[in-house]
Each structure stands twice: as C-alpha cells, then as structure tokens.
Image 1 (tube, one colour):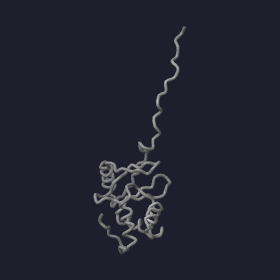
Image 2 (cartoon, rainbow, N blue to C red):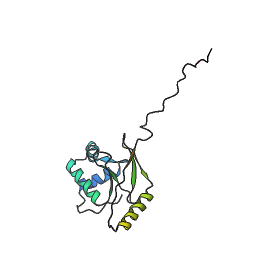
Image 3 (cartoon, helix red, strand yellow):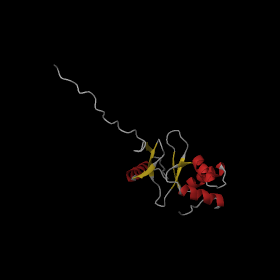
Image 4 (cartoon, rainbow, N blue to C red):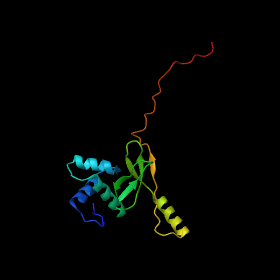
Length: 148
C-alpha cells in the first residue's frame, strides 16, 4: 500500500485510517470504518474519518460508491487505478468488473464533445448469489388422474 499524496500531513490517525481502509475487503461507510477502528482500540473521531476519506477521494486514492440513496461507501483503490464494481444491495459484497468498454466510451464522448477532464460515475448493483433466495425445491404433489 503506497501512501497517497494529499495536502494533509500523515498523522498517526491518518495512517491508521489508511491501514484500516486497506484492510477492508469490500466497500465500507465512514461510520462502519469508524466503528471498526474504535473496536480495534484506535482512538479516532468520526469527523476525522470523514475528513480523511474526503482527502483520500480528492487524491484519487479511493473508489467511492453511493448505491441508491444510501450513504457514500469507500474502498481503497489498488495501484492499478480507477475501477468499477458490482455491489450487492443486500450485504455490500463487491467485486471489480471489466470496465474497459465504459472507459473507452467515456473517452469517446469527451473527444466528440470537446470536453476536457471528463469524469464519470458508473454504479452497478445487484443481489449476490449468497443473498439470493434459494430456488424452491420441487415437492412432489399428487399425481393427477386421467379421465376415468
């Protein structure tokens, strides 16, 4: 994990925030991240977590999702850069998806329109296999009798 360049100095709390976020497998809200950190004995205020995440977003060090009307969710961005994710609406599980087509489309729109520094947001949500209701098992019923 490389420490992103931000306008803020790397305090003990900011470094703890970076480590905690990097250890999250899926997207996490600021409140959930704060709860995890305090449960681990890290003394950090919720406002500091929000500020730190805002700074990381400005430094392009995190991916941000806001599924529906829910609060913003954050995930440490790997060194490979900008990614898109499919996020489960039920449990929050996420997985990176191949988004080369989206990136090419956004670049084409920017070039065709004459816009510069075009940014985009693509949010894909669904229900993961683990959260989908199990398919009902066929229960044998009475066999209909023919005319008789």
